[in-house]
Length: 171
Image 1 (cartoon, rainbow, N blue to C red):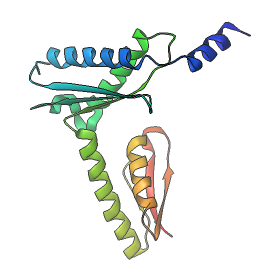
Image 2: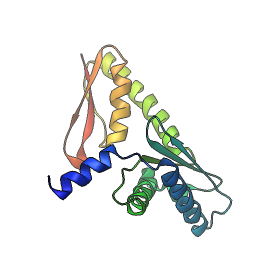
Image 3: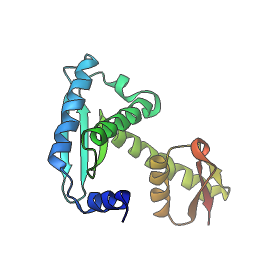
């Protein structure tokens, strides 16, 4: 057995230091928002043992800078936090980390759900398929999930990478 195979097997059978990773996320995000001059922001980090996830929320006034256009800065912040966990816990399994700022992800999901329902109704009425603008995987999943609950329409994803889009079609 190679060293790589051994270390992979050890990593999958080892338990996640969920509390250590949660504390690392909280410490990093607290310092991060303070460095941005947002000492009035609150950082809440919770760990879910059953799901092996860490959810971090930053709340407070005037946090748009941390969300960025279309959530791009928030996505980069989440990747940065994931990298921090991976670097501090080298050779150990990592929890899935999700970061939200000013409830942006919840608001975005609700808006996408409303939009998908509106487009689905239009497709059902006209019988003409509609292609949505390209979107990330998480947003596409929201649209697919909503449309799967609506009779008379279906979805398919087409395109590559950043040009991947959902098409809502009549059944």
